[in-house]
Image 1 (cartoon, rainbow, N blue to C red):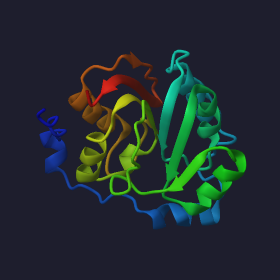
Image 2 (tube, rainbow, N blue to C red):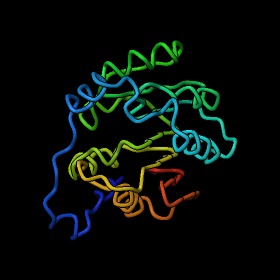
Image 3 (tube, rainbow, N blue to C red):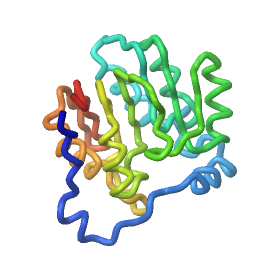
Amino acid sequence: MEPAPRTPLPTTLEMRVVRERLRPDFFDALYATDPDPWGFETSEYEATKYAATIAALEGRHFKNTLEIGCSIGVLTQLLEDHTDGLVAIDVSEAALERARARNPDVNLQRREIPEDYPDGDFDLVVASEVLYYLDPPALRDTIDRFTGTLLAVHWRGPTERYPFTGDEVHEQLKARFGAPAYSAWTDKYALDRWDACGS
């Protein structure tokens, strides 16, 4: 079986000055000053986006789910009802401490992708507002690891400190996996679901 083609990067992205990916110390500094720096627990935007994210599953139940960039575990808590097993990862130990308090039954792990991408047969991967922190090589390597159903959602606003915008991340995913099976974009976030990734 021939390996799947590597994810292409559009010429415009290759030609621009690419910012480095954001490392754990960036997130550790954020959580040191604010235990909920993005307002996951209080923001109307986050609550609306979480509801749309769960709706994108269309009532399906999964055997093994991987959540990348779980932060303090607010979305993690909502995903628990839709899967038999859930592995949730983040680069920040401070965030994971709060996630563990909220989700004592979830397998929460400190990992940095793509280097520490967890082993496992995941039939659902959830990447919510995380892939634009990666630089092009790391994003490409991460995308190439996805299998099963992929649910991706990203902020569409300015991301001056990030290597990618949300729209650019979803362009990369479409280049690799084709048209999504489900889309629910708003002016604030891009939300897409692909089925049978990596097959």
